[in-house]
Image (cartoon, rainbow, N blue to C red):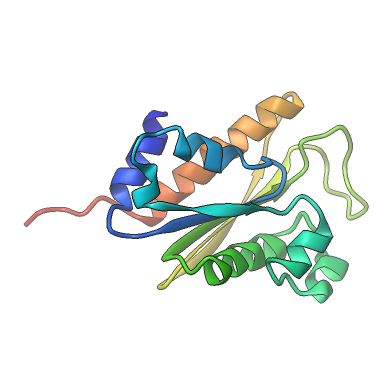
Length: 158
């Protein structure tokens, strides 16, 4: 909860949205557990299937076919799509494999891509987590919150 409070404080005056696959809304749930979070967090899209990724978030079919749902390209497109769809200042996206198995592109369980986009920059990081399905999901949530903080450094007062 501490990291969520820090994210909401750091983004005060801006809006944030999420596009979540493997976490199934866990980032949004963590943020909305904080009273007053609606001043920053607008909502999100749980895009657990490629159909939702493509139809709702506008991830191009070419990306899904060529790179797969678990890819840097998909994470970037998910963040961009969520930010546009929900008209927010910033978006974070997560896509990956929490188990029980890998995917047809050779990604093993624990492979996660986290995307971030705001009006000035876009970034995707790759993570390779170990642990149970729930541990991978929790590590993904923490890593996504950490990325938001890294991309929004504290403002220094002169």
